[in-house]
Image (cartoon, rainbow, N blue to C red; front, side):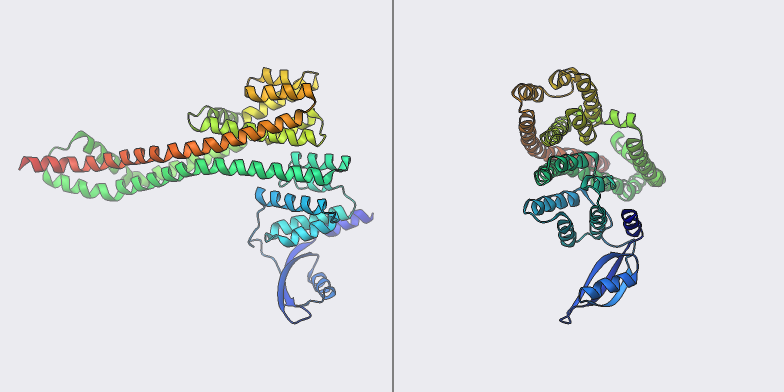
Length: 408
């Protein structure tokens, strides 16, 4: 009954912003989860703080979202404090105070209250699946059961940091060309709508016959001027429909993920990053004592690519029926030869987690090299494409002028 009562109280707590003065008369402010203003005043009074202003926090307050980076930083801080012998509840309190994100502070406050009421740490995390996925909770549960929570948290923090680093490198490699392409489209549209019509009026006054290239550019410009709202609207709707289909249709997402792996330049980079994430996640789970079948199920959800996710779920089924992981990997025909060979060595030597961890290290270095190579390749390629596009438009506009000049 006491546990249920505590949970009920926690459920009605809302965030309050407060300002006040401490015992030395210094102005201070902060945030607190409480059931009402009276509770805030009473709590602050016990802390020797004279509250001068208390208000409910707006839903539009800064830091409403919690990112993967926030969770990774929290995990690293929690691992460090637990390893140093700081009690778990005190670790949550210290970690919450050290973060500037109010949303994370509130989340940690709720988890702390659950743990304080007797809930296991992994179960407290499982109540927030948006921020702590099955992989995270399974690792924490394994650490609690084996009595090595500090070791598991440290491994989990390492894994999250390395995966975030890989994601950051992939985003940086893809972001640059994407931004340049978008800017190029905007500039081209501006030329078509505002610049080309000026040349068109000049050419119409001359009465001369226009070259085919110039006529084609003018036709495209006329379409932009007349239907710019429809063109941009269609692009916006197309992007929205694509994102909706990608997020909601598993079949569509699988096709896009398969196509991305076959892309000429970015495909190998995405594949290496996916294999690295797969190997790092599996190694962390298996080293923490999670059974292989359960580990493969968690790895499938963390793969980040539908092709590898489906293949991993097939691995789980094969391993559950008695097949070795090596033979299952070979049958999947998705995983690279190096991973299969290292898994075979690991199964024979009894050091599977160590061997797979080495694979993750190798492919992380491969991602670094691939990103550097792509960056050096894309920059001149983009310059060539943009130069060709703008150059074609300029030539198309000046061809009639050159033709008129030769007529005199």
